[in-house]
Picture (spheres, rainbow, N blue to C red):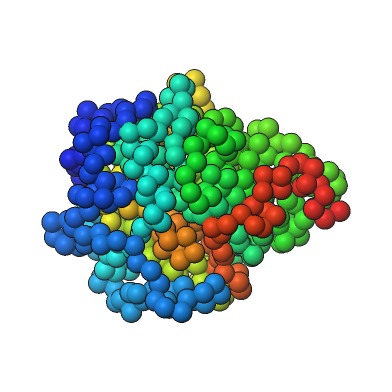
Length: 460
């Protein structure tokens, strides 16, 4: 059973709140950078020392530049695993695992988690720190109770959260520069039980965060956009040439334009959102599952349950190695344990329950959000019968370009069908993914994501 605990900076009554905005007091905000980190995490170590005190942002060792191995320039790259968790000893570590992780370990033959010393390597640039401090007492949700109305960006909107909704916005708005790109991205789905045929789609993909520009800007002065994304499939043949331009809004359903080469036309896809299955992945991958949670949050009530210590994917550079062979890492039974690094960290726990009168294939979900990076590190979906269905694990790394942390790479396990999917990773891509702090590339402009431009740049 997961053991929750209250945190001193969070009012006990707030744990039961599913929505609304409760600005931090001046006294609470004053704790940022003192007993709390600049973005709201507990600064101190835990009782047994397995989680160290946060000491500040760690830069890479001297000499790193884009194209060089991120792992080799990490200060702690010589760490050795402390212990390994598998089906034989999972009960020993159950208090620091989520229900989905426990079931995954118990039912997956040969699956294991290698646990390393915990390294709190995540920080943020000074301008993000300053904006976050302003947000503690001034960021606001919209009158609908779920949209993000105001914040100073780039910065964490609610560093001292009082609701699950606020925690989810922190995860969505964590600083990742103005965008990032994958020169080659594998989105791969393991075979059906008894089969051997993978779905392995390769694509190029770019994300653009219009609020991520260096400095200090009021969110309300910008278009109400969380991010833009574009991707174009290279393979397999059934998907090759298909391209998408998507706008994810802060206050309404996303807008999707999809180019179909067989029709030689761009189509608007007004229902390609929420739990709609993604084209080409046998109903195993919905539109709101990328990035651990994708799209607007209005279909759920969000309950802030509390905080706990959890073993999660962290400093897992092996999930971003473009030089390895993808098929050498992605095996039928699961991703190689050598590429998945785990550490113990404190996480916020948020329960999502579908709102009355609204449908979703996963009516209940649980999200676990890292206190240092605000990255969603574990997510669990339950089916309509209340059975644990899917578990997603994200893999956090320090990003040298931005001075913050990010976790685009994730793996999703379907516990009922015994299949898994890996996405948003530069594994086996040949060339590393790249984060941007300046919007000089044409793909980091709003005009790139229009239907007209998608038609102009797509193959015919």
